[in-house]
Length: 239
Length: 300
Image 1 (cartoon, rainbow over the protein chains, first blue to last red):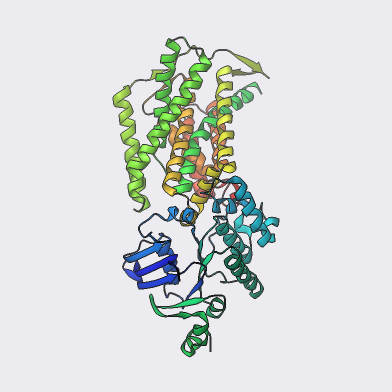
Image 2 (cartoon, each protein chain N blue to C red):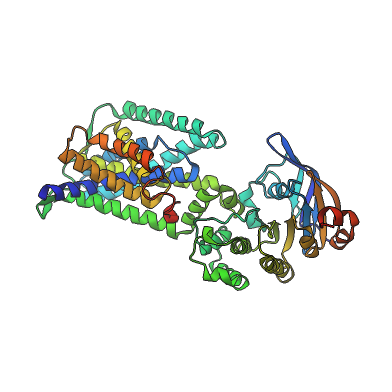
């Protein structure tokens, strides 16, 4: 395998005095879909926020595309192709659907290509085209998830971090979202890191997986192997 | 009827000026939840910069509209830089402190700027050149001076320009996005510090224009004129629903009109009281303002 696109080396981070993640090491190669699974509060979202520079890390190093990025301001990363769809989608509630998409392309100046990408997003999620003049805050949960992913795609990411894309959504919508995750990965070649509580779903869509427990990586393996692992099946797959 | 119409014309003139100042309060509040008490002083500084520039240019013999246009542009730029400097030096270092600390710094900054104006410009009124725009016309028995036309014209132009900036441009969208969710706006690549700085600059430029127009309207400026006007404009922002841009415009108009009518029909001695009565009434009965949170189209 070639050089990793993302690498965490012994990363720790804390909220105030509460340590949220401890000594996390993780590698993602270009083209992969890697899932991070674990219970509520295991540190999954914290890990993503640390990668993106929103939460300053207290120890370790983060490398993206061969360059060290911990300590960089969060707003410098999207233009490098590192993009996150955070937990709870965080749509801008009082911007229209179209304005939300425009914000995804905020740092870009290539107007024609932006229009092209916007049309692509409308193709992937036709409902967004219908609702483009509506405020983001008026969309349903599923539509907001689609908008959040569309907004992320507008930045032409090379590495996409998705935090709980299935949370609170109806099974049919979840299927649709995951089909599109696969398409983004296979057609556009976007590397994906997927944080999920729904471990079964996540692992089926992934090449590899990491299991987090109380802020540390307790296991990592091929997704298929994790799905077959009796301990994992018992703890995370509801058997 | 003539009196009524006359008061309405005067009220709209004054209200537009309040609206310009109120926008600075509401935009800054919308983006960092700070009541920027130093905003009134920026307004006063603008009035002074205006009188300095206009006096000089009039003395050089430039035509009145050239004087006004150039003075507006230069003074607005000056006030924008002043407000950005204040933000950088005084508010930004306190970004992660409690809101009370920032609020107190804003109060301190207000006192500092006001005393700065007093020390450099003196304690006495400073007169605007009287010969700038003279005359007027009558409409239905009400006298409208050309000065009022100029003031309302400039105000409307600035309000329309601001609306276009905030609701149509890429940077305006980024301002609204930053006001709504700072973390997410960072995650799409928006530099919040830059947007905050820009917000201060825009608010200050509008307040500066208001300062110059108040100076021209009343014929003079004073080092402490920012205080009372600042509180009135703040009342206007609260009346409109703080953080709401259209609300600030409406609130300014309403306060201006009510004040002029109250001065005309009740007592001009107490004209300053009415803005505060409105402020107290709004906070008591409808703290979200007339354009409150259910009309959220135009919240930043």
